[in-house]
Length: 145
Image (cartoon, rainbow, N blue to C red; front, side):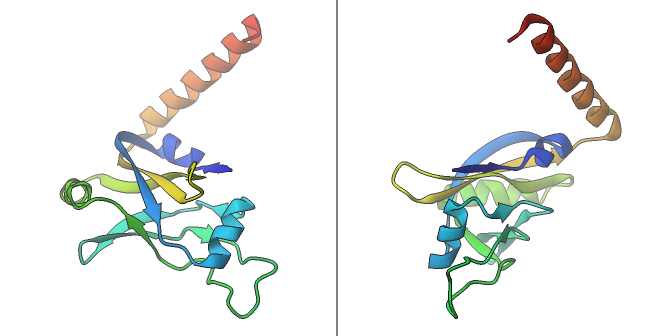
């Protein structure tokens, strides 16, 4: 199971990518395994030296009872202290954001999130991205790749 944030690659240039663990409740991991999550406008921010992801929507588990989770709650990301310090200093610079790129289940069965330190694209950069994508699509169609 893997969910990716395709819109993020259109909106940002990514310099560095990290793989972080996510602190989840029992019903959240069950919903994730079913692929019931959405990245719409999600982002990461620091709070007292810890990294949290906001606006990540994980749907309520359909078989959950009163123990079900809030779909849009903040979720803590787990990284090493050194990685957190690097990300925090870089994200304070103008134009940089920390964006969730994909969620996946590791080989050990743990939920992981790939995050990227991105700088926003300008309009002309976005047009260039669209042009490259269309050219790649045409080449694949022409040569059957």
